[in-house]
Amino acid sequence: AQKITQTQPGMFVQEKEAVTLDCTYDTSDQSYGLFWYKQPSSGEMIFLIYQGSYDEQNATEGRYSLNFQKARKSANLVISASQLGDSAMYFCAMREASTGRRALTFGSGTRLQVQP
Amino acid sequence: DAGVIQSPRHEVTEMGQEVTLRCKPISGHDYLFWYRQTMMRGLELLIYFNNNVPIDDSGMPEDRFSAKMPNASFSTLKIQPSEPRDSAVYFCASSLGRTVAQYFGPGTRLTVT
Figure 1 (cartoon, helix red, strand yellow):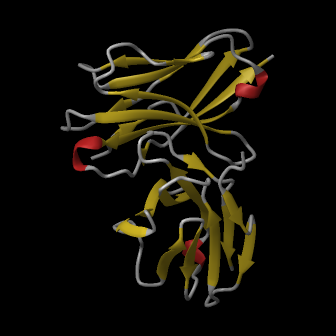
Figure 2: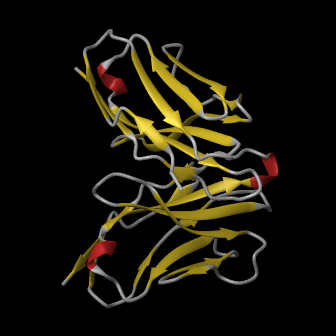
């Protein structure tokens, strides 16, 4: 079974508008972490934001925020005031901490295109 | 500060040849990861090291793949012999134990013809 599901293969947003990229996850661990990475067309993977399962507040980093709904097992990325440079692939990932395993499991990604 | 460094950035080789990918993690980081990205399988872990010791190699496809980390500042991923299905982007990432984020290198795009 997929542990990370990103149901939106592609999204369009107008410049300066907000956009939400969906991510749901599946784990039986109580302790885990959720990550979002950005992959522009140049190919590098850029770390954006992290949410721990025990964090009571939603994580924020500049224009990025993570809408964490633990009961629903969702960790959606919200990008406010979209910019042309936000056009990229976005990957949600999870690390299950209780096993001590450090590896990330990635979703299939969402391609975001910001239109002027 | 320098990020994760990978070389070469692009590699084109013929089936059956040996390929060696190289990675220099961020200085001071004690975890090093090798991931592979393909259209079919997405991003998947191959192997990771902690303090130069391999911890989890469950993602290494088969015996043709091997990885080493002889010291804290250098790791290699070797494919011998290479096959066309090994064509992918190979990423190296590093992290510091007490932090959570993994920082990725620019990747090596491998094409096996």
